[in-house]
Image 1 (cartoon, rainbow, N blue to C red):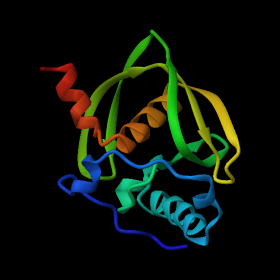
Image 2: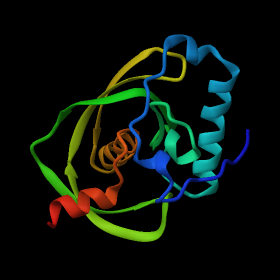
Image 3: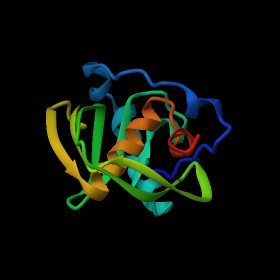
Length: 153
């Protein structure tokens, strides 16, 4: 495991949509190393989530820290959002020292695979829902500051 350099806003990889991972990709040592490195990098930076582009990788992978510990989400998609919205302060490892209030769905249903390639489907609520939305946004080339601008034109 290794702590990787976190890419900072302005790095073009943060604005590029990621490419889905194929089943064969999950069987490689490089993928397992990436997952371990992302968990270690997130912990070292005291984050609650991290997306592959933040460590310079253009694949559709993120880590979210749940109450059960870090969870790898491969090719995650939000398939349902609650109507109820909530505002909350967010920060980002790629925009150090800055915070802003973002309005997000209070709960989301996420479809993904785990690091072993097994399908997973779960409902995230409250803080975990916010983290999932934030990290999946990264995979689409969106930063939380974009959400602030869109909510406060």
